[in-house]
Length: 188
Image (cartoon, rainbow, N blue to C red; front, side):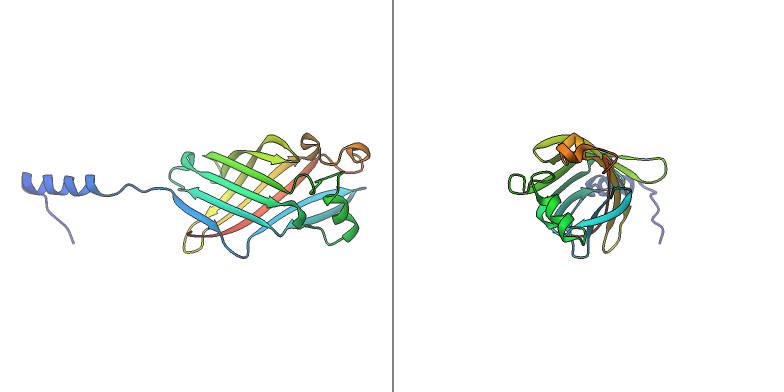
């Protein structure tokens, strides 16, 4: 259907309708079931992976305006699970996460950047083990009925005092820990 704007009154009415239409705004999302937050590192050269079973994500995002994006993730460190009881106990102890003193980690970012390859970057701050440092999360975004954010980051554990003392030797455990996430979202 085509509307012809042949009279000044018709043009004025069409312009008024356009100006009164709401502007697209960032959508607000909360984490849905099925989301994952994983980490990977090496011990004496052997790769190990783990997951945090307890994490919560809140996101405000509009792909047309990534600079207005906001991300807030809280992570229950006691939920770290590598499938190895001895390693998990060590991770939760005073040499690493020290969950008795620092039960949660938190990642917050405001204002995302769109990258040339279609991904986005969230330059945020990770609070872990009582230390706050910048960490960049790069991610892809799939909108639709159930939006999905898939992202990766690298965390330097020694910057946060995780694995100090005897564990500070980067020949035994590298400084860099790979983080990956797949977060399914729903409206709040």
